[in-house]
Length: 352
Ligand code: PMV
Image 1 (cartoon, helix red, strand yellow):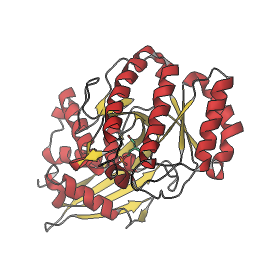
Image 2 (cartoon, helix red, strand yellow):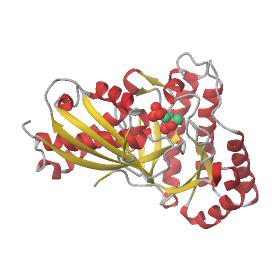
Image 3 (spheres, protein in one colour):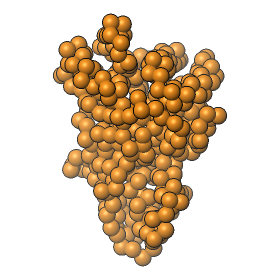
Image 4 (tube, helix red, strand yellow):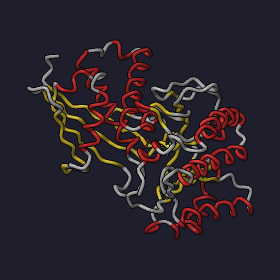
């Protein structure tokens, strides 16, 4: 292309898995299918400026919240190496990657899903500009190609990032119950009951520190894990069950699957060799409080966990007032500096 340069900008959300991805094959192919709620307010905003350059190396600078950031460079270097055969213009331009998050920097919230999906979307917009597909881009078919390839690229940055392009529910990984692929996330097309409309996710920040074991290492420990085969089979079963729950709106059954998935994820960590624990005492305090609250009320509040100590509190919009009260009265004291983030299910990434 003879285009000298330009600028593109995207905001892309985080997502929270209901059926968890844990364990991968080569090239970021998941061992089991997963499904997630796309979030609404927890987002990364990324602007990429591209300038035609000489030479055949990768050339980029990363700015995080306005300041030049060296720490992110190796991750992006690896990402570029993985995707270069799909993004042939990568060596023809210098990229200034300007990125910021709507959530606090050191919140322990995984920013890799929102961050990697935002860069992938920026690269797709650049591809679109360089190949001049603006007219075709109006069509649904072209939108499909754009989102699919953005998700495909995002997956190569961080597996779960492929579920952040669209909303409100996204499936990733071949399975018998839904339309899906191992290569990219697909918007869930099954029936979804009104009970899940504007589903709430309040994220309790239990521990904002860097976690001791990265998810990269965690995934690898599923190789030769004594329960791997059963776990991967269980994820297929849970996804199948969840599709009927999503259609029927049975929140009681929803709670069971979601909490079991969270605890199973952490059980896999605890039964790896070497074994590790990412939950903190306050994670367990919160779980017990949620269970006690469900015992004494007829609430459908439940929890889920990522690969960390923070707790995602999930509940229907109809319970918003009651649960926020419960969180303030009984759970905030277990959060680091009393910090928590109110979010809800969202519709996916947006170009700015
Ligand atoms: O995307 P990764 O490689 O950081 O893996 C994250 C996996 C979990 O967040 C623990 C589960 C999931 O499905 O998002």
